[in-house]
Image (cartoon, rainbow, N blue to C red):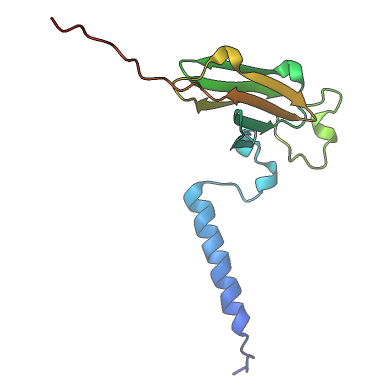
Length: 149
């Protein structure tokens, strides 16, 4: 009978491989995620913060041209739409690695009821779209005088 030296990490590595295989089989992902182009759906990251004048929505849009972005307000919902286009001069077979995602995107944000869409301003600089939403005017309670007869 051969004497085998005990390695405590051999069992851990085997367990890790079994767990990885279980997740791959359960979620239907391929073993090579680098070639899985279906995972490439992107949405720009957005910061929303308050200033003295109102709310600022700052969206990171690297590689997106100003002409490919639109901002619209409908029924108190601000919608940011656009498209990041891949460089057409680079052929698909020339890539060694392709991690950036391209294509259309859309983000929507619900606004307060009293926001006036005509006063919303947007600026696009250095790949960041800033949308300034002015603070709505507070509704003043209406006072009605009733004549008593």
